[in-house]
Amino acid sequence: AHVADLIAAGEVVERPASVIKELIENSIDSGATMVTVEIKGGGMTYMRVTDNGCGIAPEDTETAFLRHATSKLRDEKGLEAIMTLGFRGEALAAIAAVSRVELLTRETGAETGTSLSVEGGAVKARELAGCPEGTTMIVRDLFYNTPARLKFMKTDRAEGAGVSAQVISSALSHPEVSVRYIKDGKEECHTPGDGRIDSCIYSLFGREFAGGLLKAATSDDAVTVSGFVSTPVSARGNRSYQFFFVNGRIVKSKTLQAALEQAYKNSLFTGRFPSCVLYITLSPSQVDVNVHPTKTEVKFLNEHQVFDGVYYAALSALESEGR
Ligand code: ADP
Ligand code: MG
Image 1: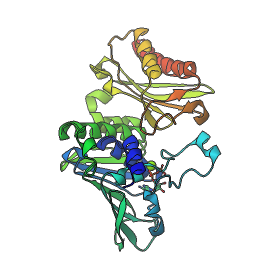
Image 2 (image 1 turned 90 degrees about the vertical axis):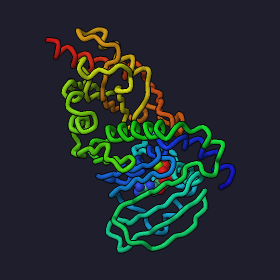
Image 3 (image 1 turned 60 degrees about the vertical axis):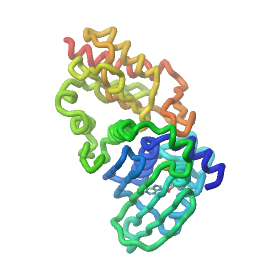
Image 4 (image 1 turned 180 degrees about the vertical axis):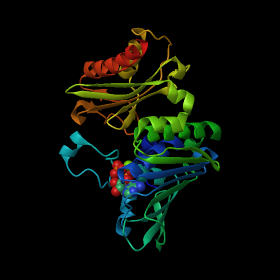
């Protein structure tokens, strides 16, 4: 791999969880309704993501692994209104630069598929292949050619936990996509993909958690908030069950967190760390997702607006229950 590719790879690919995030996003962008994720050894030795999306044409398979090759963003104006999850064309190039990748893909309606193997950024083989419609990416031996990075990896157990958390937030971000997750041969979760947030939450976290949630919703000209907030039954001892999605992306945001927690303080319920699964929709021009390729922080043009949206959604849910 070229040095520039390795440096770029370091930006996008930090650990197995970041690979999984990018691969699932690509699957969702491809229009998939079903995505299967499988990992072994915490993802360090083996990761597989299979989808039933549009597939990749044989002549485009190699291009997909080139830096800045993306099929998704056509012009400058596009950046203002990104609707797909990917747009930089960096992920596959970055992943392939630091691992051994196998691609199996067949376009919808095509007679045959293609298999392509890439090692450390170099294409090793491309062949016709029989395979189902859709795309499978297998990533083996992450960071095998960058020992310095390998040293920064935690235990397989910790990396695997990171992958699991990523799969959960990806599944929640798109309840219309059925996500199946297999870890070391065991099925960890399988969301129905029926588009219902509540059934998605139920399948991921179980009955007790799902049963302790209240429906929350507000909407004004600029911001729509919908989803669920917890009663004390579903509250957890930390913030790891606070999920915020902005225009379909999982985000970390002090503003959103503060809005939720402020609503709790002003309600009848107590509990330091309320849980939530909240979806915030606003004009793409009002939010900057372009801060960093992998980071989940976002910038809002109008912080007040989103704070108020989440605050009132949460507070009205809690008050209606308290009454
Ligand atoms: P980006 O998602 O930013 O376009 P990526 O490097 O993640 O860049 O992917 C490069 C290209 O490969 C995509 O633009 C898309 O055309 C193709 N691609 C990747 N994964 C899939 C997939 N699962 N199904 C269909 N096409 C895919
Ligand atoms: Mg992508």
